[in-house]
Amino acid sequence: MIKHSLKSLVSYPENHTVIRILNKHGICEFQFLAYPPQIKGGVNVNVGKIFGKENNIVVNPISAKNVNEIKIFNKHAGFVGGFKPDDKLFPPYVLTAGNFLNNNPGDEIAVASRNQTSSKILIIIYNGKGKKLDTVKINRQKFSRETILLSAKKQHSKDLIILYQQGEKIVTLIDVFTGKAVSKHKLDFLEKESSIYESAFDEKYLTACGPEPSFSSIHDIDSKSRHKKINVGKKENIFWYALGGTRNPYDTAFSNALTNGRYVKKGLFAHIRTDSVGLSCAKDDLVIDKKTGLPKYLLFDRFNKPVDYSEFEVSNFILGSYATKSKGL
Image (tube, rainbow, N blue to C red; front, side):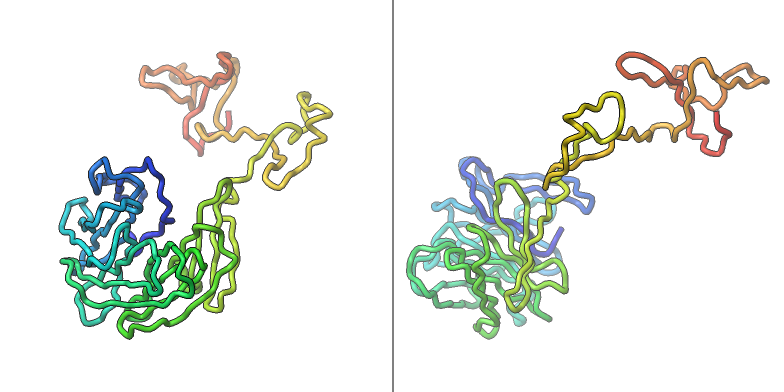
């Protein structure tokens, strides 16, 4: 389970609040519905040591305006607590978990209203039992309606809050203990509805991503607001065609005239054998063991019959065993 989850807070009306807990191999071990099925739009998921040493999952609906309960689950999908934020905050909420206050054991939960209309952004810090520990107020340049996002970034022995104002494309790193902004960046290069997170790499500063219709890209952002856009789905977006890739009787003038495009490449067709390490022989060319009178080095099925290889319902070869040190057939 990771420390801080990476997610783009985009609400889809038909999404339920389903949470899946994966092990280190990417296999789902637990799956559960965080809120009743009538609550839709998706769920915001964060992870932190809320009650001590063990990781807990802190969740809230992304877009439900009538749900004011934040829920906490353990790593086995068991419900361990929940609370309702201060009346000064209104749902839907945005939240993040982290070690924001050194004088409180474990991690804390920072909560704010997702939709902002006032001159100041109010962020309230809670412990796992819903006790208010601190508040932070950040001035806004414009008073129009705006959506904000919260995430966390490791900073020495404590965490900073990453506040991202989507409308103004401003990201602010906040030290809750001092109540001050550590840094502030204007990121006009970001796409609409982007999200900002701590980079997974120590040498990086921040990572931004957002919904894209065709591709999967992220922005690497350094401490001076310089950025590099990376197509992380590059290999997924490249397609290979084999027509004209090899010189064979099936090539045509048309296929040979095709050239590489940006996302469509000309490839060489090759049939890679992985089932029998290349050991196979024609049916009329079996090697017979003189002592037993049986074929040598063959792959047999559970009925003790040789396994053959066929294409288009025509069988041409008998497959060999995995006896890689045997002499060639």
